[in-house]
Image 1 (cartoon, helix red, strand yellow):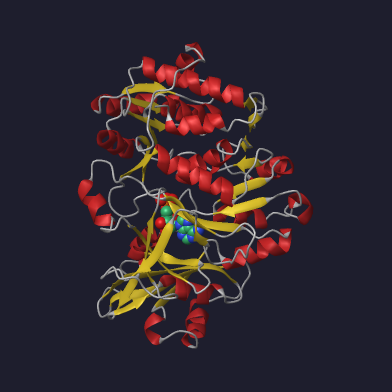
Image 2: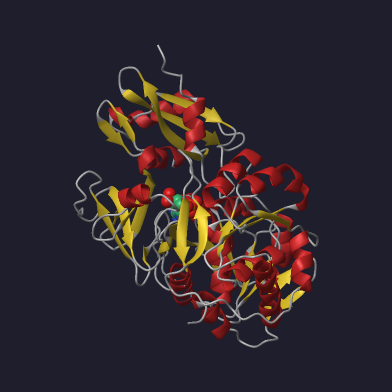
Length: 503
Ligand code: AMP
């Protein structure tokens, strides 16, 4: 038995001297460099005592070294466990206690603060920063030749903790085949080839930047331009050399605010992909007007990798996330009964396929609760499938508002508000209400200089929505709270407005 994931990557290397990555400091990594560097990291991990199935937890800034550590961990037979760089020491304590990694790699600047938690969890502490760190030194001293540790398709390659906007976040266990099957599906669906150059500006602690972006490049023998973070100046500097970009909706919104976004600047591009949060139909339309490109929106989550995508050649329909990927089944069911619903009916989205994770780390009860008996995973996202087969997401199930016994889907109200002139975007939430259980509440961001008032919005909605769907209060704010992946944090909004209907 070989190493399932890395064997597939190795088999797709176009040529040893083919480019794998251009780094913003000017360094160029060939595919041979990628194999050598990841081999050194694998060797360094094994020398530290990492055994097959051990977790290697990592909280480091984005860098080519961090990517090589990911591949090194896979080759060493370990389970790669990336952690959001924004996590505080108290949060890290929880993750280390839960995952019990053999090794914890952190930024050199954080080593002192995090050492006690690593020790408590029984993990060896190593550091990796930009150009410096104990693990960088160990890797440099390790031989480039590494005999990959045998791992099968069902062995775990990674654990990614869910963003956990409610309750403790859970570790999603992802197998070699979960990652490789999804990479192969995406390469094919999005027509990646070795001539492609991906502009990589996403974080690499999350499924989007780590797996969707990186594995699609690796599985097609393409190359990437690795930027430490999203910065419009850097994007416009490197765009002329790229053929594709993957981003969260915020990237596209920010680039649209920039005068440098022109048809000429994007003429040579083949593909813009968006995901991780809903792309406003307005952003899709504006992008098309400004650049001539229809952004390709896809849908996935930590637990499922990518599940659906708009087509490469067919209509990329704004406000939808397209069709189930080849090999993936998706259905919409009544959340209570689990019965499949007809086209256009809103319910719980469930998916099944080789993309779907193996369960939550050390949490069999939660795993059992989230799967149906026939193997479908209950995503927690509400949506529908339209008659043409396009999947639409209307929001997380937990964001559903129940007011006076009626269900209100926030997306329906948000769409009405977003269509009003002068509105950029909105978030509709339910907050405790003494008479209705929850009161529909709208938080709206206006365009600068627009004549938008809370009363004006409330009045306009009277004509458009049934009474029970109309917000009982509307707030106009400067911006909505978002996490690093561009998701609106409705839990924070619910907290901010929790007392507004209190008697
Ligand atoms: P994460 O596990 O952090 O990747 O978050 C996954 C969640 O992000 C999904 O369950 C959806 O709620 C949301 N999401 C991802 N892609 C999209 C999309 N294209 N449109 C709407 N929501 C999305």
